[in-house]
Length: 584
Image (cartoon, rainbow, N blue to C red; front, side, top):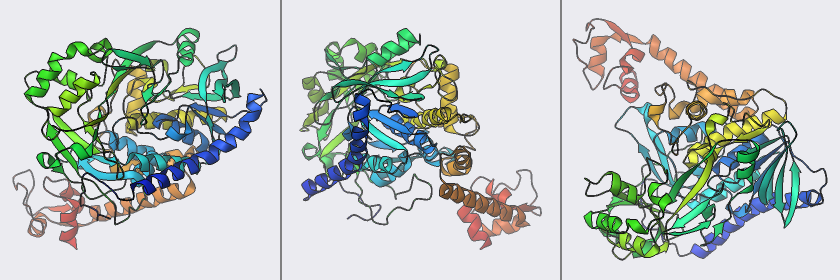
């Protein structure tokens, strides 16, 4: 066990096999309990009985898990329909949560009763607070995750949600009535086509909506690759319903993931270490264990030789990999070299994928070149000269729905009871997907129960900014959250998400009384502290003598004037610790 703040790289554990077995049992133990229950229940469904739910959520990714949880918490009987229960909570790309803007979303999802904050608290192995060069309101909490621990946590948390059952099967279509109202989901379960009745449905297909993967010029229908080297089939029937039957405008986006490397073949001594910071919690009211196993991430860089290889083999990329519309702020190595031709290097972050694996995620090296070209690119980089690729990187192109077709509750305007969340709305990233899942799932549940909808404004949450940007402006590229998108960012801090949102969520039944009481108590304590700071007034000269800084005495005030502790806190150079020490 490594004390918090220390680093280990790359992790190699003697009892790896035992730990993996235990994790597998944890994941399958929690998920299988729900799946077995559903399989027993869906025997009647397979026989076309009247088995039904209030809400059916299609897809078990980050958006789907949050949508299913939110719908169930609202009081609606909910089914989560996923192709493979074992992949629920899978981190398909980068094994991390948070970042600039994204950390705010994660904290807000937690404040709304969601899963993501608690899951990353269970699975985090490396911590960084980003954007510290700016004020605390826009700091971005980020944590690297152990893929297995995170997935196990999501499965465990879903298993604890009342009113929620998991159906293992593939969604083929949404059944609509004559007025385009949702009345069921057509699914293939155990080889049979069945209809699961419901009053509302949430589609969270991620990259599966007519998904097609690319490695070099090779392409094949798939929503994503699995970690065992296989692929998962795309969802084509739903795309037909959305486009042809409902007349929704669809377009194509693409994303990519880098090759996975064998950490035992990396020369870590030639890379720059980035140890973890002291662990911090993403979930409100959580207490992290004092001893937590952490890893060290490392930095290396591409070079001119790397860029020459990329340019020389550009012709080996398929058209979607070069001209497809991908994430602007997470470009492929090809796009980096093309756009920034004047730069001689780009950073590559080597991020261990877990405590019990040697797999390493080279953040910054995505590119769907043929496998042999990917190897040449990797081995041109310092520290990676002998690195072995365990799984090549690939691109995936998929359909998304123009989000201006949705309302602020993420309901499809042309179909009553149909909601969308995640990448199908044009976003990119786990956190954006989770946030949209919370909103869509909550509103699907409330709709099914005949209750008022749940909508957040731009002045209330980054979630509100995200939804409003999408449904009013649309997007021409994968949308990523940044703090600069929020006009009220000084108020919408990551550390006050519970104060802003938990009571709102409680009013709609999305969080329990315990969480609501905790948020109210904290809000009361904060207000009492502010009242004390406003009441404590001292002459400016006394403040200066007690503090370790001396503001400009010509800045519009007299040294004989009195100022409150709250006013002193507004001065450049002051912080709460200094003021607290001064009045102690």
